[in-house]
Image 1 (cartoon, rainbow, N blue to C red):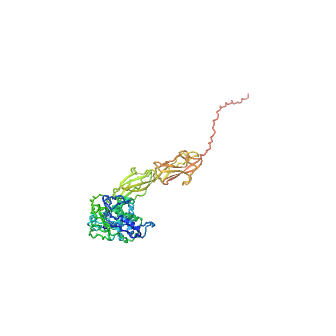
Image 2: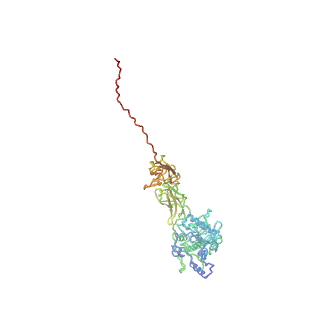
Image 3: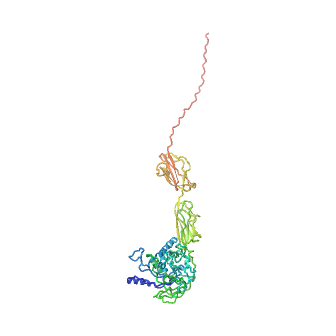
Length: 611
């Protein structure tokens, strides 16, 4: 397209008041826009507030500061008082967006939302830029694949009324081997397309004349430099990076606001073309075969700093944009003062610009207290084109009170991405406290990208719990059990240290019913308790229970021990009185017979014979 066109009064105003309002609104923007130079807004203030001087983040522009259509949105907006706020399905063709073009804008929004969610790119901004750059691909004149037919080419940027940009692509994109031209529905100059071009329709080509490729390229370009397009200042900077003109910014913003209030889809090829532009005074169209017909092809291209400015247009016919140093409309000056070209400044290419941070397949983060996590946090950094980006510093931080730390005992570590764009945090070691914590990964400056991962520390576990001896545990009523209860916990046949054990006096092996009689423990105050929850195995997985006492109820009772992980054991405790035994009968003592002196034998009487 050759130059700015005058805004035209919309037909359809039915009252004097509406017509007057339209004239006033259009008259306020009659002056042609000028390229910004040295921070001055030749076409007026570019900021949304409307008062400050416009500036850009760099000296380059996606379109080479080419001209653009300056038609304004319809006076009747979709959300006028008393109208429905829903998206209309029909309406004036001038306000509608061709089906393929609208689909490309929305697809680009979804793609960028995935790779760079913090940019918050709205498809309506792409639609606004597409409207002023090419009239929505000349009213949706694209083939079934979304490719403009014929190709959309701007005028040769030959320095005669336009910027002077000598050929950079050998005519590959713009069919001009002498000078560059803005190409396609989003009007990229070849050098910019070489850096930002995309293949959004997966046909193996990056084609600036394909609306899907061009819309995604425009979306990534607008999101560069860590911009958040939900912030007005960042959106202004993004639009100005596309074309460094305050008037351009206001025109795009007017369509952006209009599309935000609602629009409607129309068939491809039925859109209304913007007003036919005229070639600015002093411009000489290139005779190359690729030069478009001004009546059918928009020809963006605005003079850039250092080029020969075009004269101020007359108020009653369209004219070109004045270059830097041109007089402002209405100041009475007619002699433009050219400014020397600004030296080029080096800036990161899109391939070097950090674009997004993504999860690189990190799985669930779970570990037992005191153990190392099997999974490690891994992220992927991409550049502004969506390709992996190396050498990006990523800071990983552990937040929580579980005691979990990275290897080496650190809560924060910084790792740079490798050539594949990935960075992996050191291994995590769980603390001793069970619970949840988070790991955050942060990369980028200005507007950092942040990823947050949830992690869990579970209590130490045991899958087996057994007594260390088989002694019968018996106590008399009112006494304590003489033998202590000792158990050993293991996990996968290894000693399970630090495992929490719960001991409960129960009526049944399953522990469904607690017992309120029989054996008991004592708390710190010496009162009976029949459940203990503060028990933990030692370094060898062994637990020796506190003393157990017996009340006056005789019988066999059960003690159930359980652990995290499901290990359990049931132990029998018996309270019984000791058996009474009869005293043993003792035999009478045997006494020795008394010794008696032998009796003296009486002399034997003998008979004497009679005399």
